[in-house]
Structures are given as C-alpha cells and as structure tokens.
Length: 538
Image 1: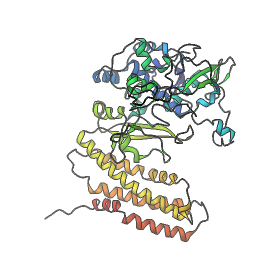
Image 2: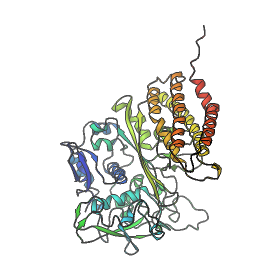
Image 3: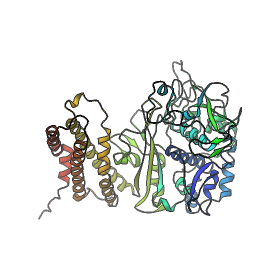
Image 4: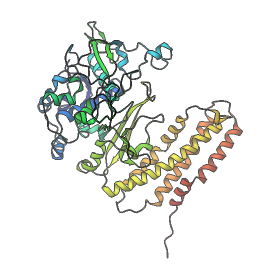
C-alpha cells in the first residue's frame, strides 16, 4: 500500500458518510471531508500531524498571500494529488528490501515483536512478566490492517516513547504535547482548512535530489546509528553523538524516526483488531533493533510548545498528571514568563500573522493533546485533550493579556497548593507520612474554576491596548470564583471520600485552617485589594 495513492485515511464527510480516502481527497469540495475518524484518540492526533507534515513538505505556500488564497478557496484535488504523488517514492508501507515509510532501510535481522507493541500504552515484556497489565490487557491487538498499522507506526515515531535499552526516545522527547490551531466555527469548516491553519510559509526551495530527500525522510537512506562518542572536543554535527538540527533539513522534524522498525506482513485474512475492517494481509509483528536515530541539540518541532531558559536547550512541554487545564493557557497560547513556557511556532505565527486575516475577537481555538508518560519509560499513564480559546490581539493587547492571564493563573496556583495540603490534612491522621498522588484534587479545582477563567479572559481580550490596569470588577469576579470553588472542592473531597475513616473533627480543623490560609495568603490579599474599586478624588 502506498500512503500517497491508496485510500487508507479514515474520515467523515459533511453528510455523515464514513470512509477511507487517499490524502489528496481532503481537497474535495463536493460533500467535503470535515474530520478524521480514527479508531483511537492518539491515531486521531497522529493523522492530523501526518497530514500537516505532508502539506508542509509538498504544498507549503510561497507566502502569506498564497496561504490566504487557499484558505478562502481550497486547492483542486488535481493540484493536491499531483503534489502529494511526487512523494510516493518514500511512502510505500510494505516494500521488502527497499524504501518503506518510517522503517529502517537495512533492517533484515533483529528481534521480532508482536504488532501490538506499536501501540502506545500496550503492556511491554516486563509488565507481562510481572503480571501487572491491569488496565490494558496483553494480546488484545494482534492483527492490524494496513490503515491501522500505518497510523500506529507514525503515532509511535512522532510521540517518541523510549522502547527499552538502546531504543531511542523521539525528537520531542517522551510524550510531547501537540498544539494545533483550529477554526472557531469548527463544524462549518473542512478538514483541509483545519490543517491549513497549521501550515507555515515555505522556508526553503523544493529540492528533489536524493541528498535532500534523505535529509527530510530518514528512512530513505541508511539509519544513522547512535553510538557513544569518545571525541574529546566534540562539535555539533558529530555523527557519533546523534542527529542535530544542523545535520538535516528543517522538514525532518515532521518525519523523525527514532525507532528502528520493519513491519512484517502475513497472508492470513481476518478482521483488524482495532477497526474491525476485513483485511487480506494483516500485520502481526515487526522486526526491531536498538540504536537508531538519537536526536540531540536544539530541536524545535513547529507543533509543540517549549520551555526556554537562558543558556539551556529548548525543552518540549510534556503531558502532566493533572492534565491540561487553563493553568497552561498562557504558556500554550502566548508565553508563561513564570515557567519560561513559549507557544508552538505555528501558534505564535497564527496570532502574529493570520488571526486578523480570518476574523476578529475569538477567531480560533487551540487543540492540545498528548500522553502523560512515566518519565524515562514507555508507560502511558493517561491521554489528555483540551481546547483553549485564541484571540486576535494587537501587540499591546497581547502583552496586557499575557500579564493579566499570568496574574489570574498564579493566584489560582496559590489556592491549589493550599487546598491540596488541607485536603490531605482532612484525609489522614499523619498526612506528612502519606506519599500518595494528590493530582486528582488539583484537577477538580482547575475544572471547577475553568468556566469562570475563560469568561474573564474573553472580557480582558476585548479591552483596548492602552488599558493600564484591568477593571476592579474583573478581579472581584475572579476572587469570588476562587473563594467559592476552593471551599466547595474541599467539602466534596473530604465529605464524599474516605481514604481512611471519616473523622469529622479532623475535617473541621482542616477546613478552618483552609479558611485561615486562603484569606491570609499574600497573593489572594493582593487580588482582593485590586477587586476593591478606588474612590474617585473629589
């Protein structure tokens, strides 16, 4: 199956029809494709990234004028088909002994693994040996159709969980957050438009020589094997140290390949264990070897936000136990100066260059998704998705909102710390000895205050850039939201849960301490002060 010419991408059309299409069919305007219809949420996110990478690689606009032209009028299917099919040489899924999509070119021997280990979250050998596959049982997905195998392969390589000794983590580390700009009226936009919002202007010429192809598609040539470097004065670019951004094309980031894999196809007609589609030649296993591409240096993937600190390499933001909530809004949409979080390149570019072109006020949303992975392991703890508002703002409004948003979020973080401590005091006789995870309490609070935060944020985004200080009623509304929800979440957590025994005296004592700490907190007192309207001098 060739991923450029075959129908394999699961989609849903405007009239509700579901089918598999070839990538170029996203440009169809009669009964257009409105969304991907993947059987797993990580495949959904993976296929969006695959198609964005495809557009960026073969159909990137020359400039913003051309981008706007295709935003207002989708390119023809012939244009897209011709462009995509130029890459068909690198997108054969099953091509024994030759170039195959995201598969090691020369991998003829190695360890054979069950195909289910391509799936992030599948129990590995150690988990099975210890018999602790409690949530995702072994042997559930032993036969995959070509569509699901391609989706699983790309999703694994782009999310980059490490695969044990010598099996490298991805270009964005283990479990990166991906952020995609989505149009405000999502139900009225085609899939092409959703993808197109995340395609940047062309940064280099469309070269077609073999060397250039190799620098974009790592599977087009012999794998750069990672070994320990013994060079005393190693410089960036040393092949023994790994692969640096300077070693390859910028587009390589969309097609990174940390794992050495070769899919094994069989002749055993059956149903796919994921999507239930009948397949004549399922994939049941793959061959793998360690020491593939090791990505080092200052890599920046255009679809991922990063933490940037002085004199340090950019660090991709990962999934977290408490999920994705409005506490991350500043860092994922604009910039969180407290934690040095910076929005993804496509998000920054959209706000700076495109928001005004496609509308006013709240013109888009940010779809954020990714796995929360156990640090340094291929163990998935949870899959998270969230949608954040994105506003059109001039530079002054942007700076104001960044400061005001940080102020509101930081006050909420202070309250979360107090709440978490006092719930623990209410739950346990010896809270300092308890080492359990309290992130569920954090999540309850963030969810309870989310609507209030976004209502306030929308009001702040509409203020003129010359506004010196946010109105007192804004601070008043936020103070009331925090005040109401901190006590409500505490009561729900302590009176409806029972980690040990229900001790009413202990709960009341912890509640009194919560009130004391909340009202005496310096950040909260400052918030309340700003919530008090200043009297006009007579």
